[in-house]
Amino acid sequence: MDNVKKVVLAYSGGLDTSVILKWLKEEYGCEVIAYAADIGQEEELFGLREKALKTGASKVYIEDLKEEFARDFIFFAIKANAVYEGSYLMGTSIARPLIAKRQIEIAKAEGADAVSHGATGKGNDQVRFELTYYAIEPNIKVIAPWRIWKFKSRMDLIDYAVAHGIDVPVTKEKPYSMDRNLMHISYEGGILEDTWREPDESMFITTVSPEKAPDRPTYLEITFEDGIPVMVDGEALSPYRLVAHLNKLGGENGIGRVDIVENRFVGMKSRGVYETPGCTILHAAHRAIESITMDREVMHLRDSLIPKVSELIYYGFWYSPEMNAIKAFTDEVQRGVSGTVRVKLYKGNCIIVGRKSERSLYMKDFATFDEDSVYRQEDAGGFIKLNALRLRIRAMMNR
Image (cartoon, rainbow, N blue to C red; front, side):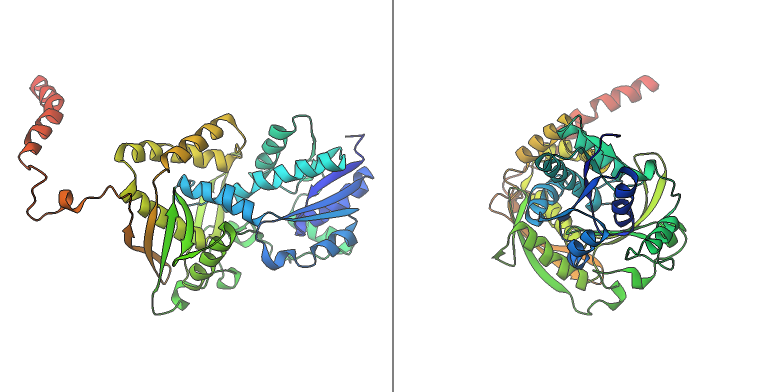
């Protein structure tokens, strides 16, 4: 690291990266280029360029990656039904490989010696960033300040920021960490480390509480083509605009709040509180369209891979050979997962109330409980006896 002259820093303008920008210049005497990926942080990006320059950045990249994020990352997670430990839709996890990929591209273009990030030595993000760095540029130098500097807590960082005149959006009264993008908002640390304490209502940004949601339900229709959402209420929308639109509708109806204790890749458990309104709707709607268009055995095989693909995303192995194989499999099994789902949103609940498709495998004539001419019920007896044969033989042996 003695030869580091130029560093590209993944910069958000939050407490950690604001301090890191100043610290890198002091510690290494190097040029620092601040890079921020616009993946839907909204007002968090306001004034970011000026702040980075004021803190000492020689150059600032703020790049609009919202459409790419929705199209290539969020929609893949929806197609794969990726949910970590049954509850977490992984809005932070799935954003990191996109951010890190572009960071390496900028480092190459700028002739930088190293890249840096603000992830802590206890968290998952350090792994996600650095696995991507090394997968794309195996010899890149990585500076991870949280693993080497003298600061021990976020309070130390707040004190440093105050001493150096760095404006940060965190106070000692609200010391939790927040990460926002198009897919979700996450809250961790600080007051949330007490797993018995209910989050303060004032903390939430994109969703109203279910108690304050409208007393009348909101209905909407989502259309899929080969597993990809393409329209809402008959209107074709780009990937980013579709997710943003559902975020608004979901947030107004209190959809998508999750409070969980998850298992971090590095070993400890961590509490996270999340708001994921739009993708909570998409996940439920996608499952619904699959229910009438996907073959049973294909569905069960795909479902067996959900824990694995979720782990790969959560752990940071987006650019791995096993993920490439799962992506190809997912694209194959999503062919024909096309049609429209009707959803009812009401006070925190996302309820599927209709589904239709020209590719539907649901046949009313076969499924009906009324009289039919296409299914011989007496055939079921032989089916059951053949499937029971090994059970009968085992029972006879036990006797």
